[in-house]
Image 1 (cartoon, rainbow, N blue to C red):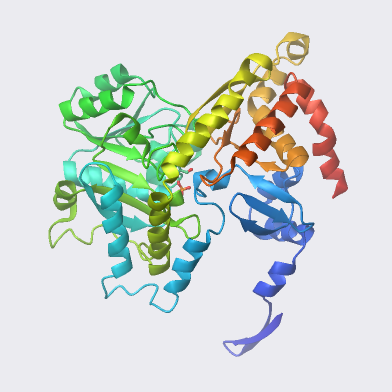
Image 2 (cartoon, rainbow, N blue to C red; image 1 turned 180 degrees about the vertical axis):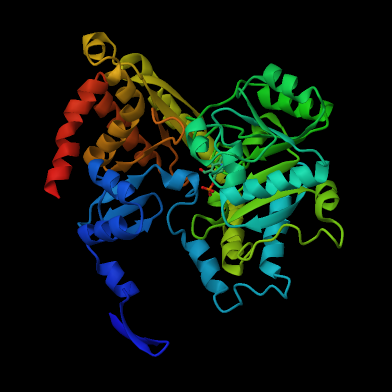
Length: 473
Ligand SMILES: Cc1ncc(COP(=O)(O)O)c(C=O)c1O
């Protein structure tokens, strides 16, 4: 579409693309536009992994490409699609409020109040105040600020290998140096301790100057790391002993994913502050939230000079919170946490025996439908020696991506490696997934593992698909 506009008396021609035109773009055109206007290296990586196709429909666990080929989505938007793609109840809820003002800051929003009410019903302990925002990182930012203002202290303890997002405050907590280094200096007063080590945590807490400890109940992007039994209750005890708040980041683990409405319920731990996002609006509209107790909320923002210290323009918009109401209702009505527990155990039982059978697979771990598959990082042997260790390094970085490529290109299963640990593939399907689809994924993995014994095997074996995909285009 060409528009002619008059700007300060001068005629300017503009080639604006309409929604209808964008929907008709083929893979090549979309890639070109990405290269020119978004992230060119990401566009190139999609080609390398042969991920670059045009998906035209999504429903529940499935997506379809333009050739009518059906795929199973076991990546599930990094855990955001707990209710599947485009759940009709969530879409219906958004549709139901389409004529209401989506934002009207001079008015109290009934739908937002209802979602906060329902969260208070399902959250553990006395977490009953929520603040709505638009992403996980933003929820973490809010929790960080809340802990500091309510405690009057500065120090925050986070875990190595953690992932809390990539905005400046959240990135300062995220325990991965390569993400942090280019952006230094980060937020001051943050220290990292090994995840799962209560002794190391106590040493940091001992001075009594800590505002909060922030942890994921299971580290997601760290490679689906389940802490030792008893660790979280011990952290709770230590936080109480040294008068520090406990923030649990349940952005990935929350809302049924691990077999409980919230992963902390596995060991009966109640945090002082909880962060939510991802599945909270059924994967339809961006949303985030931090939730806390009445006492902490009032300490932080309970006075006339403080109640507007933390705000967000789009936070709590009507459509997002309407989607949230539908999502929470689905969680409770369909007992999706129980479904995740049963289905997760079934899948783990199918996958775990493969560790002893196939040399490429090192470990299978997880809880509920948050499962990680770790691959052996070493190639070893003469090839690695001859390459001066380069093969091992490549294996560490790319084995997960290659298995992921095989799962997609040969078996039509979408998976993804974890951000902090690319040697781990995560399986996070919608909690509504069928047993038949779990079987399909287990068989697909077994097929790949029985074919490829090592990184070099899979690198050369899959090169035909991967390199072929580059020349095809
Ligand atoms: C545990 C956890 N916290 C925070 C985030 C950041 O969420 P967002 O990408 O919505 O900012 C993520 C994202 O993967 C996450 O897994």
